[in-house]
Image (cartoon, rainbow, N blue to C red; front, side, top):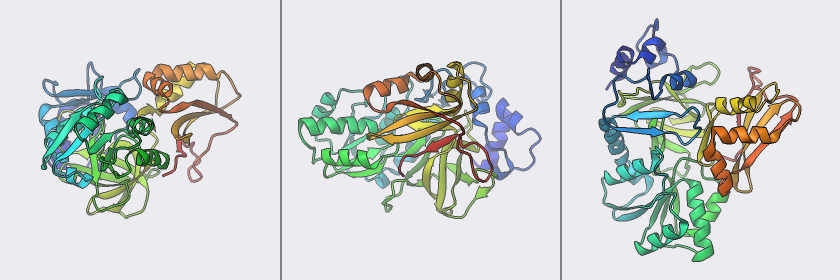
Length: 405
């Protein structure tokens, strides 16, 4: 579908886009407003949905792994899901896969998570012959290790936190698995301390990104085989349009090396159109004409802490529900003791930390679960007199990512 056809279809069949584009002149993407995430998800509800273009009568439903009080639900038709998996499958050799590889799929399954099913379906549609071990990331590490040994798995795919949990068990139990030649990670950044642990467990393995995508936006980018930078991806130019826009002005950026907010327009999704949708990351072009870009960390829509996404509006609401009197909230992500840590920086006098922590756990039981497992560090609250601001605009910086690139 062309961009123009998609815009016309969404404007005609989706009440949300009809309202968004009311009075908008022009048919080019740059003429259209950027989707406001809060408004989009307020309209994209389970009941009385205003984003969908028709009744959802076939396909799949997924939910983000973030907060549960206002779940983000994504709807796919059977045709759309199949097309997305087939499109990505064609790029699997760029991720480093080879004929005959035996892959341990450790992505998250169940509870409306999409990662395991996507990996399963995409690998089944691979243009090269592969063997898949559908283990899931929730399987006990003892079972995972035994299964990998029994069936000679030489590729492992999953979230970095899941991979590291397995690696720690490998080191403590058998020392290493030299047969594994490729580690495919997705869903989180892979940090140097994690690489060191993985390298000790899998000394012959290369580390590569499996896919860059999200439940919201679907597949966004695939690995570039001749690049040593795991943050570099190639967009799916035949099925989506990526834009990088200036975070202050909203103007489209085309030159390389200039940071901006990443927007996606998916040309294949008609049921739940995603047009100029902010995927939540900052990026810069490496080669705009060839669709190659580099990720630069999260934008301000959501904070990715280990395997959990916590949306900023929900975190600020948690502070309010805790009864905290404040002059603003800033979200900070740090790397502490080889784990991600969520820090809420609150402008005001020191008050009840436990109430804040409890409310954060209410909006995201998954975050509380990962803290209990030791996957992410416990929540920290900082009480400050003033929050950090953008030196150009004077606006408060909503999200500060202090983790190393």
